[in-house]
Length: 174
Image 1 (cartoon, rainbow, N blue to C red):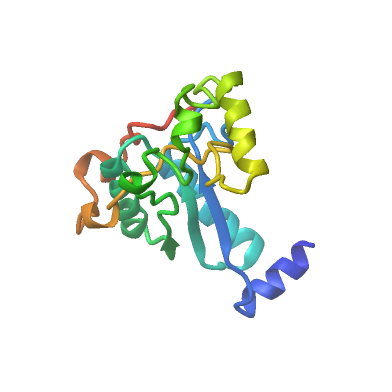
Image 2 (image 1 turned 90 degrees about the horizontal axis):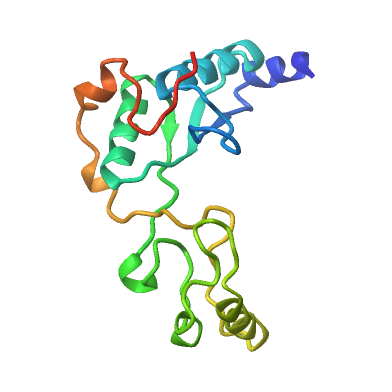
């Protein structure tokens, strides 16, 4: 497998995709942002003959933090980075890619931030699925989106991010 990855990388047939979600379980990394990106770059180099590195998923609590992380990725030489959680909250009325009708919201959110179900709201939501009027639901991390992140990206990452300090949302164990 390593030989094939190396050959494909040398031929320009691979891109290394990396997802940065800091924090404790179930998040996949306890590394800080810089350490994670350095490790991903090293892995792309050692396994895939220097294949381009694509920061394809990451998340922070604020639009400005996400914008700063995009700038930092560029400053660190990451080949591509995507802010993938754009949400038009003015349209959805939610912080994600889903929209609940008043018949559901009358009972509150179907899924609480703790993961617990609000059964009356859930039953109303199920009805929207059965009658094909559902507009998605808050599952698998679909909340937490932001609008207009790209217009906040600075020309150069702020000193607090680019100085090597931990990103405010990351937990470094290194």
